Length: 336
Image 1 (tube, rainbow, N blue to C red):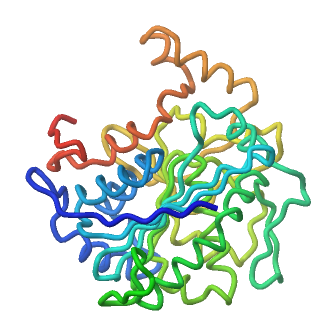
Image 2: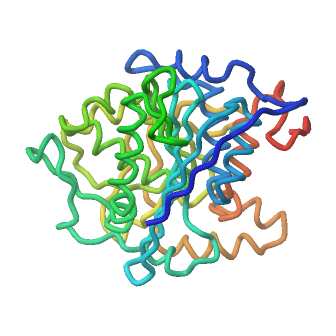
């Protein structure tokens, strides 16, 4: 298990993207169910996209969006033979009121990581909910990655609940944790959803569940199977899934691998805006996977007509679609 800690500084013009961002995050999603918040979505999408980098990069980008002088902790565990490539970032505001938990997605060049994504498990792959009274079938590979860093993540969040600094748990911050946000892109989104299910459905984690404001995921594959028990209801109300049409990953695992489904509120990027979907994305056919990969290499016109194309899954597409036109990018550009 590897844990790294850094401290964010301050930024100069044209940043921050969002002045008074900590106050915005602390005051958002106070009711359940709540409406999707565009600022929250952009900030968390940016964090999820840069979670593929290192701790210094995540820290830099979070400072730029508006969380200055924060503490950032990276927790990671890798076991190649077990397809475990689990990385979580925790970003704590300087005052202590807000924490973002961000799970990194699949490493693009790591074959074993992709194999873990494909390991859906069997009907015996279940998650106990409501203190063991109910169970739901889950994606085995995603669940293993959540559990690999679970206890270290809980330890850090417990420090935040106690009003300790994640930069140095021996020191106190001004406030204990008030608002927890969980996010991730791709595999990271599936891990974020499973984290929320576990926290919301078990009384032992009630202090965290009460502070869990929302879960925002981007290009998230399906992580659970039907039917959903009643114990998933609280997590469903707090989950906001973002899908770019023709991104194949939200339609995985394929139907031939067993009946999986999405839960929570789904938003799709249509005609330049995020719109609430009437029904969630359904599973694609297995034959669509190689087609979506080949579409990536096709000429532009053929790619545009393909049903799915993996290039639309890249996190920068989600970040670009999430940024409001009146805000600078995390790179300091105005062009959309």
